[in-house]
Length: 236
Image (cartoon, helix red, strand yellow):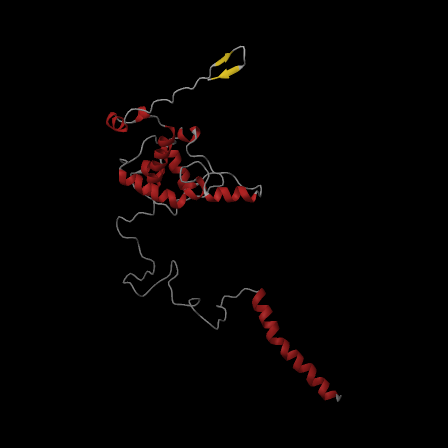
């Protein structure tokens, strides 16, 4: 092969490597310029950045002050007991608002969405997620609490509220998904589950107890008599 053709082949090979080397350089180095994009979508769009000037408003500021009276999410001014479930360091023992039938119905519905998959519909810790995890037997599963257990029943409502908000052990926090009032509604429904499984007829108001009627009579006990005669043994 003539020397000039060899030289041309070497030059063309080196030129072909230039785009590859440029891509490698762009990949491993930082740049203040935006990257090249064939399909822009929303990668490169007009936007306002923090602490920058803006010509849209008369005061020349791009960032706008919040309207008067604006509060951050979950920042219930003057309602720490309702928002946090505690006063100072003590869990609240009572609900911050009256518990109505509508509250319990809302709690039942939200409980079915967020709690029942692990804790079960009755709160016994036997939800479908828990059953599946036990069947897999991977050794890393922490069983959910039995919500009707005596230890859980003894916890103040503020403690249960805080558990929903911030989570506990392997249970994640649901504060970003469940609002303040819905958290209290779920706690009220959990209290209803606990009362339903740990209560007795004496807990009912007299009118409701009378509506149930008298308790069923106990079944008659059966007796077996054995007589022994000269010709054999007979059981009656």
